[in-house]
Length: 226
Image (cartoon, rainbow, N blue to C red):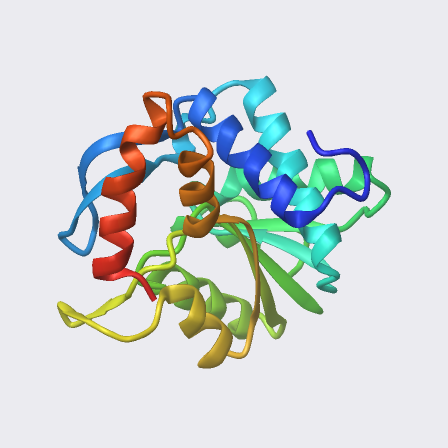
């Protein structure tokens, strides 16, 4: 990990290395939700043990603290956002920033306390924690839920910004999901790493097996990047 006060770029490079070593960031041919054939794939569901989740939460917390983004609580959208929100809240508390957290169920509970929300009441400025943003659909659903509870959807934290064109009604548009959330929804977005950081990582390893992926990832960015 980067030392305290380490630069965001250094943190991003360390995160990319960690994701590759953990087998979470993979190279090959993968079909995205938009129907594109991507030369890389990021699957946060493969952060699948305590050590990996703990280190992932540390990256989120350090990126958030470095960003200076203010927030009053953390929200994790079902399903991948649930363990992310919980572990990030634990790590933030360990680093001296204790905040409440909540998450939602996809199906309303019809017994006990009922409803779709679990955890602390949604209030104040809410930080949504998720893995990646593709079309921004999940973000819009979380935003609607937070507003319905009377709170403010203030910011998002994601692990990887793919920096590629979003799709609307099956057509490419000139902005990414992250740009849409920032410009159209007025929310701040904190990312641990971006596609540019992945390209830098691959370029720095030009003489290795990893270096062979650089050309394919760069070509993908030139075609679909923003």
